[in-house]
Structures are given as C-alpha cells and as structure tokens.
Length: 115
Image (cartoon, rainbow, N blue to C red; front, top):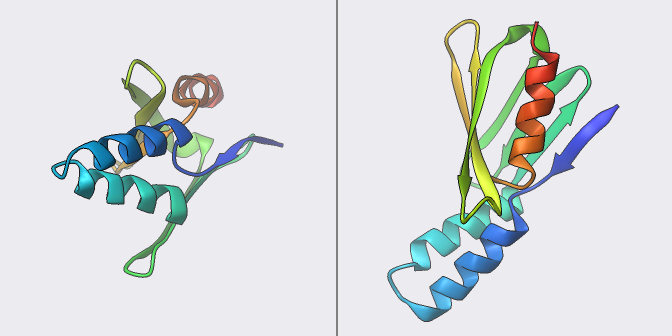
C-alpha cells in the first residue's frame, strides 16, 4: 500500500517563483526548487521508502526498508507549508530530502513503522 507518492513541494515552487521574479538574488534558489519539482520523486509505502533523483546531471535512487531506519526528523519551512526531512539508517548513513509536502505526516508514518 502506498502512503505517499510525490515530487517537490508545490508551495515551495510557488514561493520560489514569486521571490525569484521579485529579486535577482533569489533566482538560484528558484532554479533549485524547479529542479526538485521536475526531477525528484518520493514514494513511501507500507514496506519501504524510495527516493529517486533523475536529473540530466545526476541519477540516484535511494531505497530502504523500515527495519533499516534508526530515526527520522523534519524541519518545517515557510510556516510549515513544506519541510525538509533527514532519515538516519542503522548503519550510520544519513539521507536528506529537501522541500516535500506533508513532511510531518510522512515523519509520523515512518516513526510508526520503526522497529
């Protein structure tokens, strides 16, 4: 069963576009936000967590099952409209996912699956 499947945050993209149009300083962050929206995919199921990056520059796929996860933490951005997540695995690896919707719900779902 799939709990969540999505790309970068809609709110982050809209805020980045507005700020990028208003200031030249914010344009690099706007480009990064558009890249996350276009080339990342996050899938959380009842069995595993899958994060895929498919940009023309870099290809990456991170996949792990719930017994491998030690902890998960999130940080809200823009008053909680989107957030960033850090997943720590039992082998010591850290995986950071930037700019996702429903970050608190996903965090709580993962914490409920931890062994």
